[in-house]
Amino acid sequence: MSSVFKKANVVVIGGGIFGCAIAYYYTRNHPGKRLVVLERNEICNAATSRAAALMTIIRSKRSYIPLSMETYRIVSALETQLGESLGMKVVGMMHLAVSEPKVRELEDLMTIAEEFKQPAHYLTGTQARSMAPWLDTGEAMKIGFMPDEAYCDPYLLGTFFARCAKHNGAEIVQGCPVTGLLYANNVLCGVKTSRGNVEADIVIDAAGAWAPVWGMKAQVGIPMAPVRSQYWITEKSDIFPEDSPIVLLPDAQAYARPEGGGLLFGVREKRSLYTSPEKIPPDISHFVFSEDKGMNDLAENADKLARFFPAFYETGIKYYVAGFSGYTPDGQLVIGKAPIAENFLIAGGCCGAGISVAGGVGLAVAELAAGVRSPYDLSAFNPERFGTIDPFSVEWLEKCAASRSKKTSG
Ligand SMILES: Cc1cc2nc3c(=O)[nH]c(=O)nc-3n(C[C@H](O)[C@H](O)[C@H](O)COP(=O)(O)OP(=O)(O)OC[C@H]3O[C@@H](n4cnc5c(N)ncnc54)[C@H](O)[C@@H]3O)c2cc1C
Image (cartoon, rainbow, N blue to C red; front, side, top):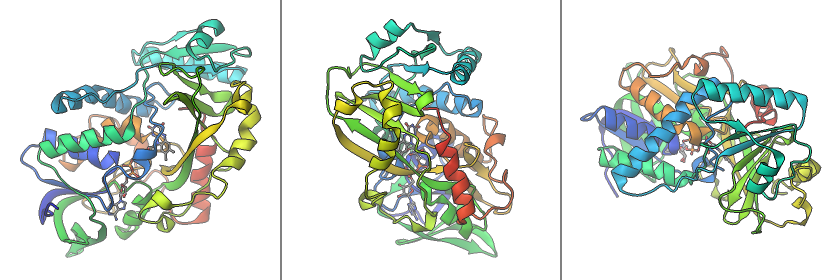
């Protein structure tokens, strides 16, 4: 087991994809500076390893797009550094609209794609069906296709960041819970861990769903809440070819992509399940999100899904995956510093898009930690945009959960 730096320029709480990406960019851009990531379990064990990992670039939230574009850019640099392939699946993303409002949203997305110089075009129903044989396009009013969109193995991407960061000199310590914040003369100067104190000029809270717990200790109400994301994977069938695209069904608030010969699909439930950050156990591998494994939500949405996926009722479900993501009421990330807490930086509020934006978040937060201006406009992600909030109150948690229930994007 490696020793923990006792003194570093930066200490990161949490070795999920955000913590690992921050470590990579900081050590790449600021050689000679010391950074340590403290992870209480194994890196990428929590939300990161559970993600469906759609790496959506083109979405209605323009603020996310440059961050996701950075993720795509950096994948090839990580692959070169490690001499290994991430095996990213660039299969494209189809958007199928069957109502006037969703057609208008799709038209807006096509404009956004043009603005960001991303390829996009419309498909006929026959073309769409030949690419995704499980899909019924009969009701489609318009079908858009973004051929450069991809999905990946999220655990592998997180560990690629971590391994490259280690090569660059970062220390990544696993099995090391942060147990408290360290203050000298009322100024934050590091963290306490199960293996002793780590002094640092900057503390970064990248603790995922647990981030508000550390925020509170620094007197900062981090405006996000842990909300369950869930998806199912069907049994194998020839109607789910490995190279078929990701499909977004905004009228059904659903998405799907191939996975191991089956179909991985998710739906947004009417009322999303949430909890208070203090109530999530440190290891969620045995955590029971709901006894019914989301089956009631699936039943509630079954007819909506079957409208587009006629074989739905005859296809067996093999796997169920659930995890907590940090949601915010406006669906924007929480990135930056809360002026009330000197030396405390936040990288959270992923809103179920943390794999796709990991590159941009890592770069932006690494630069802020080094006292350099972020290359992106982070104003939409300002941790203080909701004023003073209590991240543990039921009213706040419900507000955040509602933002997932309304989601129609990937
Ligand atoms: C079911 C599901 C589907 C998803 N699908 C997608 C998708 O399609 N596309 C997409 O982009 N995103 C998706 N996401 C979201 C994505 O997984 C998250 O946005 C991303 O993983 C967040 O990374 P993180 O580093 O912030 O959090 P995490 O990966 O949760 O990492 C936080 C880490 O902090 C550690 N930690 C907490 N407290 C302490 C402590 N006291 N001391 C030390 N360590 C601590 C935890 O152990 C954990 O490893 C999905 C998420 C889920 C759950």
